[in-house]
Amino acid sequence: PLITLFISLIFVPRLFKVYIFNYLDKNLDYFHCVVWRSTISTMGNMWYAYVSHPDTAPDFNKPPTFDPLLGFPNGRKERCIKATREELDKANIPLSKRDYCVDYFLELIKCRQQHFPNTHAQCSHQFHAWEQCEKEDEVLRLKEYEREKRLKERSKRIACKESLETLAE
Image (cartoon, rainbow, N blue to C red):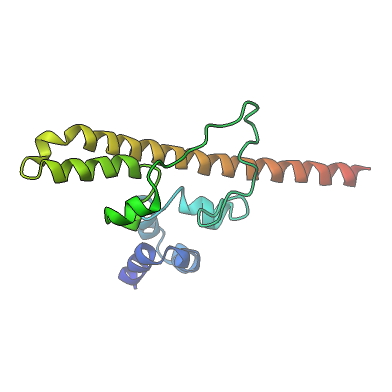
C-alpha cells in the first residue's frame, strides 16, 4: 500500500487529496517522507493547493482569473514569438519545445545542422542562449503563479472584510 501511494502521487497528482487523509492518521512519518522529499509538485506546494488553501490556490491548467495589467500602471511588455507556425513545422520542432524560447531553439537546430560533427564546440553560444531563455521563462511562470495566488488571497480578504462590515451594521 505504501508503494501504491508513492506511485499514485508521482503519476496522478490529482489523487493526492484522496490518499492524504487515508495515510495521515496511519503513518505520519511516511507521509512527510513522500511529500517533502519528492519532486512531484508542479507550480507550487501541493499541501497548499490541496489541503490548507484549496480555494485560493491557482489552477495552472486554466488561464489567469485576474487582469494581466492589474498592478502595472505603465503596462507590460508583450511576449511574442518571431517564428511562424510554418517555419516550425518545416523544421520539425516538437510541440514540447514550442514555447516563448522557440526562436532560440530554432537557431540552435540550424547551428547543429550546419556544424554537425562538431556541434558542441560550435553551437555552445546558441545552446546557452536557449537554456537562459528557458530559465527566465520558468522564473516568469513562477512569478505569475505567485501573483495569481496573492491576488486570490487578497480578493478573499477583501470579501471577508466586506462581509464583516455588513454584519456589523
